[in-house]
Length: 308
Length: 308
Image (cartoon, rainbow over all chains, first blue to last red):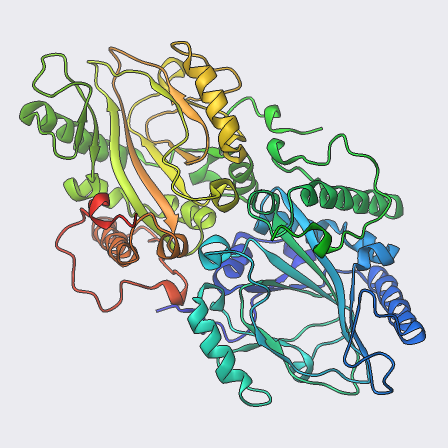
């Protein structure tokens, strides 16, 4: 009998060779995790790596706290930056990456035609190290979350700029996207009771240029690491109809983030005129960017658009 | 610019020729309606037609009211039956039809791996006629329904046993699956103000053996007709995770209807040993049939399992 546990590894899709096939969609819906291998070509990878290096250098130089998370207060000598928010606004190569047609085609197939980008950030471990990422389910924002998004309508895409080998990668429990809160809490507590426990989990070993998709309900974690650089650009996507009716942001956020997406598509088209662009075609009732003034920023702080 | 209204007809999939392609999935998610052409082969169509004729003959003969809807009290001379509930329990050919692999493969792709069957019925117009089916959205059972199922996770599959030409078919408004309640109500009231108005709608012209899929949120209706027989077997599907956590039935209903589905698959396998069967593989956390006693009926009346 086929069960979730028959998958000892993260299901994967060689996206440039096959595109996203129905079996990849099915695997993602069932297991809550999917690796897109070789999403970035060598040239784009190099450009995004340089942009990432520059953003991280800025952190070290300025010890900035706005939009940057540090392991300790940035004034402390052992402090290291580990996360930067709103990277689409801060970096043109990352804004162009946000218009990547293969990534967006895959997101359209999984999230639906009216996908919008929500969070964008870079999460990284410098060689100064970073602590363990405890086992967790990402911010649960919906009542009846498993019923509403268990099969994977709210998705984090992590685009890897460095290798993530087994001792420095995200681990995930396939199928935990369907678990109720009680089982998630119980399992996370058990796994987090020791420094690093991977019982029931599979490693998401990634190469530079790969992307790891995870359902935000899938239980995942990562071990502490030191002396090894790993940078991941995260884009989260949600269905506009869910954001519009339920949140977590206010309805006005939908149109603004659709404008951001359309601007990223324009930027990408300018820099890659020969590439077949992603065609953004949300449902008629969900075209909320129309008639709005041009954007002057791509940074829309979550707390300023929070519904609750 | 491509918009919903650029689709003047119901999108269609020649299911035996191509299977359900990603573009069919996308069209269904966007428009809320999709025709599967040629789902039944000639032999199965004939067998289900005979079963349908027999069920309708029974109505006329017995004037039964349990599980049968009539245009008038069945004792009145002009009364005609128009709908029979729980047809999977009443007819072996229809139970076998409920195990159809191409239909279930398509449902798995749209509803998700943990699909369960919910409603099963036959809706028909005998030559005695049937009144107009007013413009409506099917029973809305979810708070924030557009956010939860706007892209099409709760689906009615209507399998046609007779031709449905333009003057005797369902019409639907593509994209209305994303409309808010206010717009649905306003539009339905305007269209229902005259005897038959199809402004903004497209006809779902169907041939015997075709299936029409509709998102239960898609606004649809059908004209009154007389002198023309049209019989449609309806199967509705929902994600088990949604039914389990939100309803509308109690959690125990999930396992029972999974047992029904598995029994239908067994019945079909016995009668079509050379056909590649549908592989029912819900998420591990949603295998609620395990350890239950064998079924003695396939009839699970909705009102006995209602959550609210």
